[in-house]
Length: 271
Image (cartoon, rainbow, N blue to C red):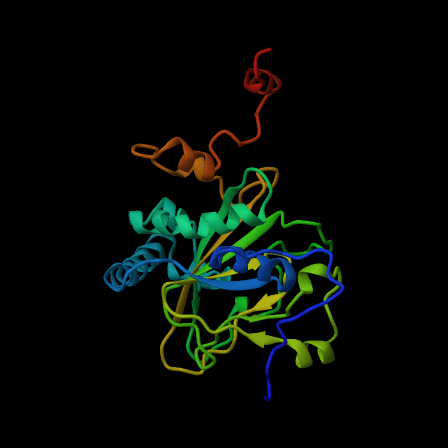
């Protein structure tokens, strides 16, 4: 039979065991640097979030001004929406299915380093359409991830509307590859609205060109080891009322760098 994948093997002394869809996604991210997972969010909740996304963006533009966002090349990005948007933005950042996957990828504690809404505008170039890592300007590899990003698909990610391109396994190479290699090996990820596209932050990726007449929307999250400072200090910008200790820890409470030696010493555990 054509395209029949062999299932038997020999000479194998070690094997990875994947007992769930989350295990399989973690295995794929470890090997290839990317995977997609469902969020478990229903259609009604997704529809409400799509409305929240647009209202949050409108308010953001009113707050910071169209001119400023344009000349800083920030027009298609909304920074830290969970700090100034509806509770739904916090909800997608603390999704249990997603966090269970992140916990399999990052060893030990991790925090939400950043959350940014991303708009891929129709029939225009935009800054996320260039190849990059989500730890930019870095050229190293690590034995396990120190940072993982998760794009929540507000809309379907398709070939036509500029779904994310990745270079599989490039999180294992220090250098950016040649144009010829990129042309031969880049693949485009398609995902449904409500899915997460989860990447090792060191994989090279880029948004595709949106050839439709409608903007394609997503919300990117970066989770890192606490050693890496947040893009915007979330604890200084979030109302803590109603937040559990686990969520506050995820948002970086308790991990901000001490301002003085006295503050550092006071933070040390008592013996």
